[in-house]
Length: 224
Ligand code: NI
Ligand code: MN
Image (tube, rainbow, N blue to C red; front, top):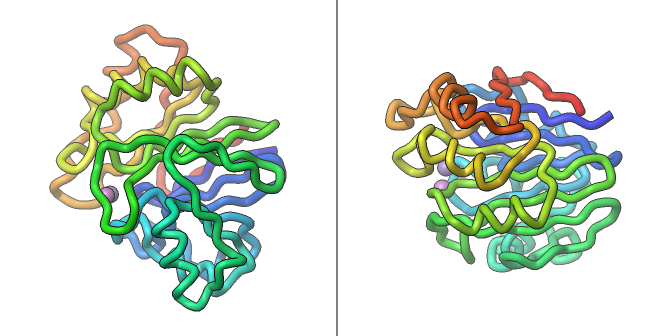
C-alpha cells in the first residue's frame, strides 16, 4: 500500500512500489512533524532545487541513512562533495527519465530560479502510482504536455503565490495536468504566502474536472 505524507511546506514522504522517498526534506519548517533521524530507512532523497526551503536537511538525511540522492546534475555533484560520495548521488537533467531500482524519476520544467543547476519539478513513475511534485514554479504551458503523456495519480502543486503559482493559476495547472488527486503545498509557511487551500479547492471544483482535491494537515497521509 502506497502513500503520500505531507511534512509541511513542500516536503513529502512517499511510499510507492516498496520504495520510501523523501521529496524536498526541509524538516525544520514551521509546520514540520518530522526530524532527519526519522528517515534512516529512506531509499531516495529527491530535491527539486537548492533554495533552503527545499534542499532543507537533505545532506543530514543522507548522512543518517543509506539513501541515494536524486536531483539536477550540478546539485547532485554538490551533495556528493559534502562527504556523501559520488556513488550515492544520481544527477539528471530536465526531461530525461532516469531508470532507478524499482521506479523511474524524471525532473520536469519549473519556471523559477536556483543557484546550482536549474530548478525542477519531479515526476515519479512506478507500477503502483505516478506522482508529480511541481517544485516551485509559475504557471507554464509545458504542464499540458505532462498531462497528455502521463497518467498522474497524485499531483502536489504549490498554491501560495509570491514565489510560485497562486490558487487561480494552480487551478489552471490542474486543468492541464489532469491528476486524479491533487494536494496543495507551499502555502501558510510564511506570511507572504497568501494563497489559501480552500480557495484552490473551490477554483478546481468550479472547473468540473475529474480531479479530487485533498487538503492534508502536516503529518497526515493520503493512501493509495
Ligand atoms: Ni524556490
Ligand atoms: Mn520555495
